[in-house]
Length: 170
Image (cartoon, rainbow, N blue to C red; front, side, top):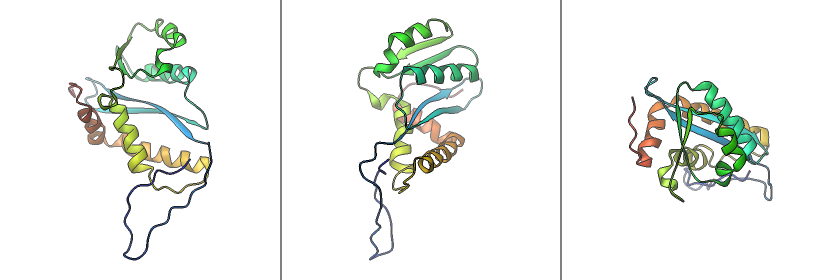
């Protein structure tokens, strides 16, 4: 829950001070997918929030189940090599969904993962210097910021372009 501290502006002679609590291990975890659909011709962002929890295979399966309900047709999922993504439980679950294809990014290649740019935008731009103390406040702030990002199609496209993946938009 410690805020990321970034450079800020203030009136000359008035140094900004960011107050926060130390030694807090509470957090808001998220799992997300940046989608591109040839039919819709624009990117989408799907997120599931998990206040005060770690993301495990159980949360990933719940997220994928919800994602498949929202997306039609075949789905190609480009994934990093997080241990939870490669679990036997997840592979077993995935085998029941033939319309879901998994493609793996090379080992340790975050620059190729468009979602890393989404998380970077959250952490270093939208959530930086927030100074919020309560878990519910951070959760609400993160959800509001996510709505802004989701509505900004050019920004979502920029995350894909920054990754260098050769993907066309419609």
